[in-house]
Image (cartoon, rainbow, N blue to C red; front, side):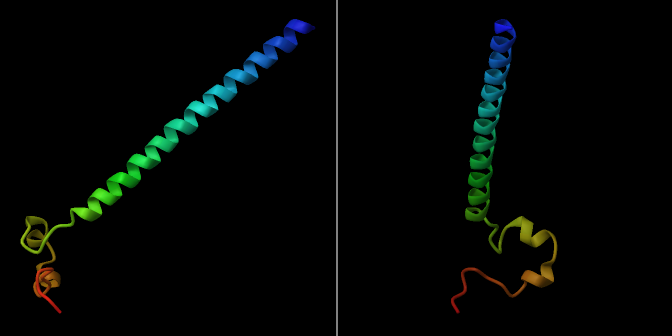
Length: 69
């Protein structure tokens, strides 16, 4: 009976370790995702860039980030 209890304990410990590893991985992924979002926000296209010239020209025709209000 003792060996069954020990095996069960080991199995539970392994499951806890896997959960802990998955939590660390998920946390790292979330941090990377947030860093990428911030980087994308910092590198928005300017009015002269190709991305703005390519599509929806009429929307951005009068918008210039360099123009002062």
